[in-house]
Length: 116
Image (tube, rainbow, N blue to C red; front, side, top):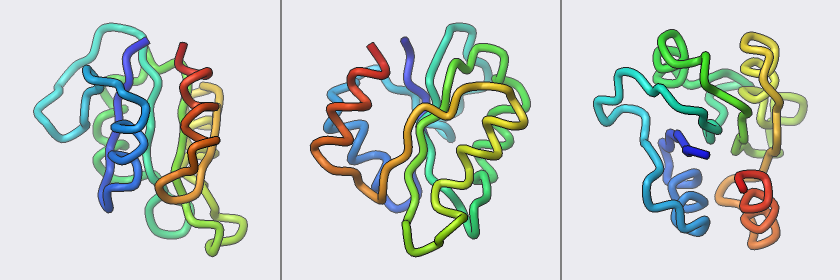
């Protein structure tokens, strides 16, 4: 399964590197259209919002999305990883997993299992 991701502060990028996914596609690198199934890894922006670059990407690329995994900060309370809830509701895909900031080794192992 292909992995598509975005990372503003480096937290999601760090998880991608720990996963060892060499062919992950980073949103914002000129990817206009993806025509294969993928899982989206993203951060949560603001107070539980989907990052703007993800919203733009999904306008043309949501049909092959099979799930979403989200990074967030528990300091935001109910808005923790809120982007996953929004994407789940808007695109009817499973919210597969959430992790805080750069994730733990346990998070990485769980995500590896999910993307197999």
